[in-house]
Length: 268
Image (cartoon, rainbow, N blue to C red; front, side, top):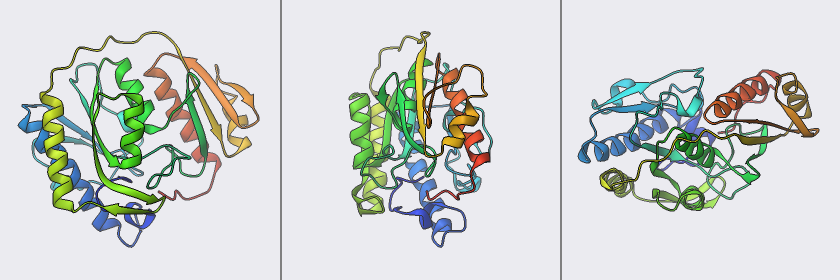
């Protein structure tokens, strides 16, 4: 939700924020544009996973009737709940750049607690980890929407992914906005084209990967060492080795532990 058309700060995307109710409607409009594109490309089975914050942002009655909605939390696979090897493609709507990047509302999963993430030594955020996990299932990321920083980050991971910049970052909480009708027309067109483009089947990955996370709090890292297979590289960084998507699910457990140990409201 953070990098959707016209949304730039916490008041737009967090329940209780002065513009949240408007923001959740804008979220549905971007998602519906992607659904229309998928339908135009011939998609007949579309699942939407509401994956921001409370995961109860999209009002079911505002969603395009061609799609089914996965709503609420907690979900074992979080942002990727419902994704299986039977899917032909994954579309990511409203993504943002990773922690430390100069992008609109940039962060990695938890706004305060996670400073950095690495996958096999490579810096990664929500985009890269979603891409890698989907690829492990044999599902390509076909298209992604977000600000220009998110689109650039996606291109670094996989230049074949179609991206749509719906805004252009001026700072972390400021952006130049594309007109809404223009942005949604671009989403619809891009998704339709991406899904209509033949793609070679991805081999399902089975080898292990190493996921490392540097936390803001040493308390989180210390507590996570009680989970079998988790080791420390310093007082605030833990890692584990395993196969995706299981490693992604384990990371979700880490975040739930971190949330239980901290008392800071999310900023985005």
